[in-house]
Length: 165
Image (cartoon, rainbow, N blue to C red; front, top):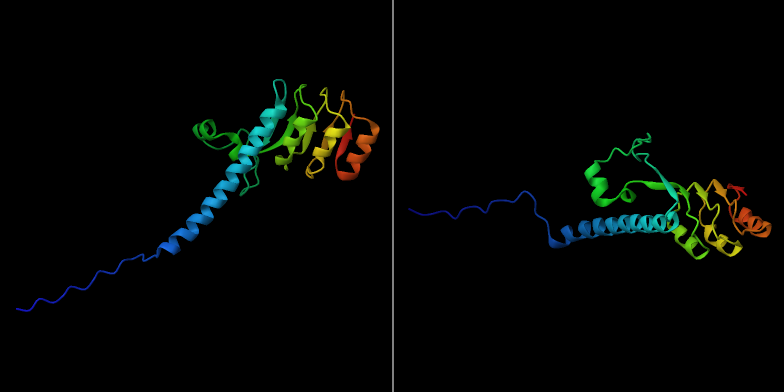
């Protein structure tokens, strides 16, 4: 009796190593960028908020557009990972110890809509760090060392922003 060689079983998914590594690399780069942006926001908010500042996050779900306050993410996830991975800071009220040097951390908060620098040690020199905040709609500078010349320069850079003194 002659034994026939068995047919090799055909695998359902036949991928080469290159085929697996390309999507894995793309996913890793996207997750790294997302993580970097969240860490940048968390650090900026922590420095600028200080001891007596406040922050409000935009909890709008990107795929639905509806507001969710508080966030609809599971509490255990927000506690372990942080709210900065899922939301964007939209309002920031800075603490009194904020100086011109502290404002350089604002470059990561591109979705910031309202910023209160009232009663801080900010001067005209620190306003240059605000020029990249194109989403900024309201800026409050009451009780700072900012002059009219600094406000004029900032109005040129942020024409859609209402600056209150």
